[in-house]
Image 1 (cartoon, rainbow, N blue to C red):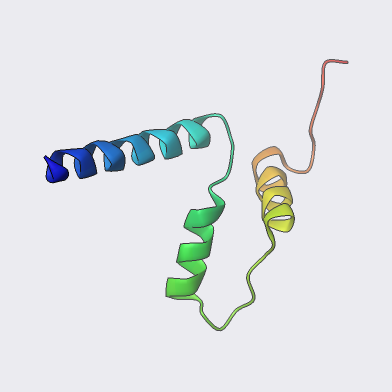
Image 2 (cartoon, rainbow, N blue to C red; image 1 turned 90 degrees about the vertical axis):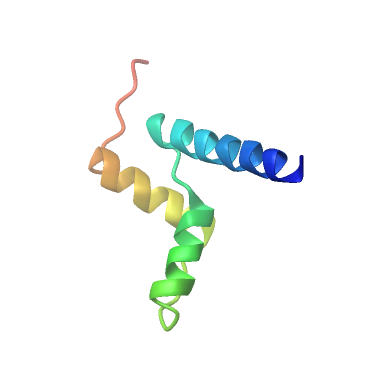
Length: 67
């Protein structure tokens, strides 16, 4: 039963991550894990800085609005 619950939680986590990526919400926890594993000697961006950098990368610094 525990293994089944663990698999369901893991699937829910991956589904949530996929949905956030589809709508353009960056995954800060994934970034933190990557930085810790691959670049431990480099400074880590704060969430606001990370979010801004991801939006600029996605939209080229241009966010257009309808109104």
